Image (cartoon, rainbow, N blue to C red; front, side, top):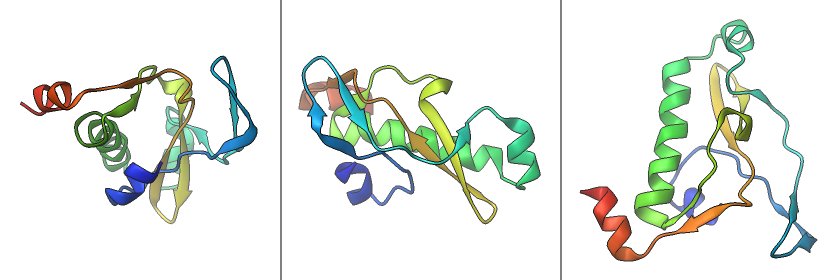
Length: 111
């Protein structure tokens, strides 16, 4: 979360709940939002779907290439949308299965 914020990305990542994190399981804050794939709701709110998808893709690329830690289980069930005006902000969920990349791996993805 801090890395994405430092990179200036407009995404939401829930906070881990203190005392509920272990090697086998963890719990995170509840975040408002609706399914990333709910086209009817996006249209109803006048959301630019291409811009929303670009934000989510940018966040994933930033995690891999700049931060070196990313969610290795990115599927539609782990993405929500929060609407602010006519923009949809991606909500990135379920960081229980993350991969840490070495600097060499990050640079290889950048190439």
